[in-house]
Length: 264
Image (tube, rainbow, N blue to C red; front, side, top):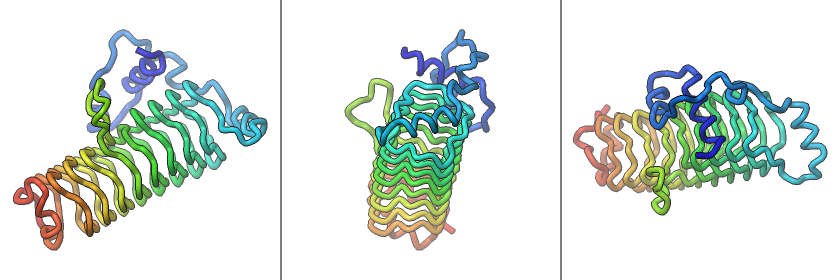
């Protein structure tokens, strides 16, 4: 297993999380890892270092792959196109930063702050962002196949994003966006591909799913009250114990377990 993957798994044990996040992280943990290593809790660069790199880059996207940037405040920096593949960003701050078109595959950004960040067109495949703060972040046209369990994504823009399951590469299990127990209040999912996505127990109140593909998604226990479902594909989406408005029932006829949903 790659060094960055081992480090990320170890850090997951070291941090304190709420119950659903801890349960998610508990899967696949490695024994015998030194959880006290600075690589899990410190940053090898400072904000000044990163700013200097940007100044010298002449517009070429930075390569910060596999770096330990835990706890670093990089808010409002222009990091468009940055390569952060495999980086450790736990508890780091990217509020208002420009990460558009960035490579964030396999990053560990547990409890990180991306409030209002621009992640449009970014790639987040296998990313670990449990408990992250992503309110008002822009994920439009992004590829999302990471774990966002318990994340706060209030008013996030996920329009035209692809969070669906990767059916071609399942060597490590079904790779898809995991939004279990995430707060997606008023999130924008227009025309997003959410096929087979895990939305169980997510707060989806007043979210906009116009034209979105929710087929075969797991939305058991989710709260859809006030959500817009006009034109959404809901074939075989599991809504057992989900909370819906009575008026939404007509739009959810193709979903599974409609009779077990809680209608307000």
